Length: 97
Image 1 (tube, rainbow, N blue to C red):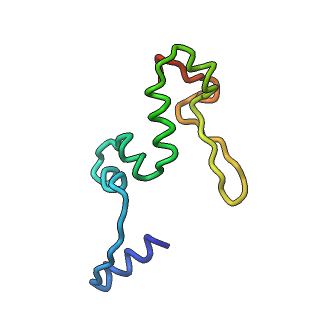
Image 2: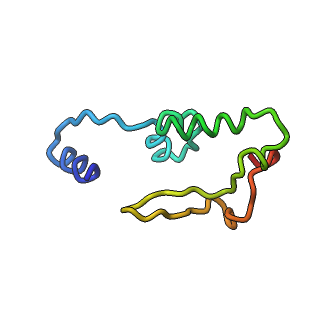
């Protein structure tokens, strides 16, 4: 819907004040988004990743019990997406966080 709205605004030479996150513009310019961009886009996920990076202990794998997957809900169905190939079998540890 947002794409259609933007397309209609451009077609009709109308200025629409839409505030997109900085990460969108970086993706359009082929610039790699940063953790700060994620914090702007999704503050909860950004803070969680920052806490993982700042964790001082050696026992990250046992404390957080994470792997390289993310769960997303789409129309009532929860889907597990792999962030890297075989991400469901790779545990997050101090070396690969």
